[in-house]
Image (cartoon, rainbow, N blue to C red; front, top):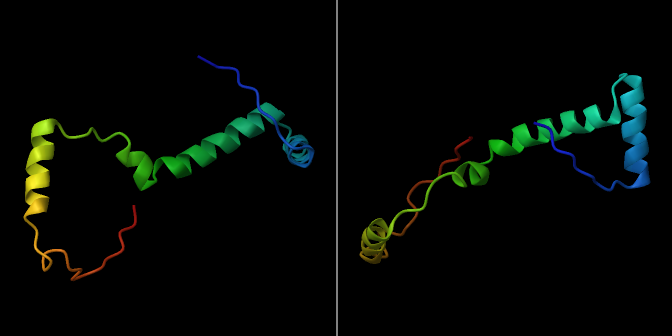
Length: 87
């Protein structure tokens, strides 16, 4: 099912979209839809977006986690190794 949406573009952006759309013989709407899909595909793999679907813990789990965190010592909180993980 399609939904209609209106948006405001500055004139220069609109003219650029119109020009590129004409070169590739597609409608401005199709060009914008494709651009939005491309941007969404990039953003959907972002860690924060992916974590948005993870449910929060319940009260019991929260209590347990807070208890464990409250028992950590200063030594436990020292950084011992750094790694970069690509998602």
